[in-house]
Amino acid sequence: MANWGGKRRDAMGTLTDEFDRFQGDFETLRTKLVRLAGDTMKEFNDSPEKLAELKHAIDLRLSTIEDEMTDLGKQLRVKGGKAADRVEKKVHEQPFAALAIAAGVGFVAAHLLRRRKSS
Image (cartoon, rainbow, N blue to C red; front, side):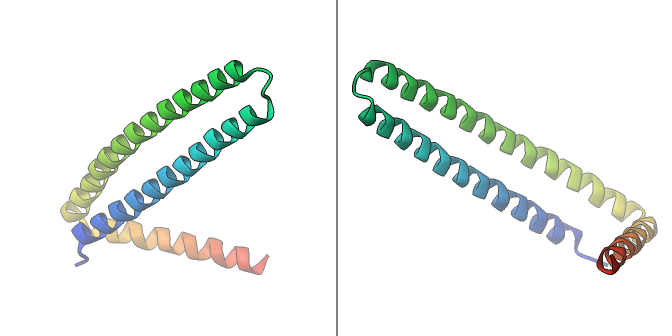
């Protein structure tokens, strides 16, 4: 029978990698926005105080969003792990039903992909 624990770890690893990539992209965006705010300040020397306030507000908001994303990532990992555990338990309890469901899903997916290619 398939190694469900290994597949669950692989899926969690993939999910973690994707989330880490998303956080990296977010940090890059944050850096670019802060740099843009700094460049804007240089261009508009007539009101540096307002631009400094804007840069600070943007930085604070981005920090808040980043913290929220980190929290969401932790929640996602926990909930994903719990869901994977439940699926693994059901598969171990009813392997034939799980096999039938997997075969059905595979059949439907193959049928849909075949229809898409012929269109």
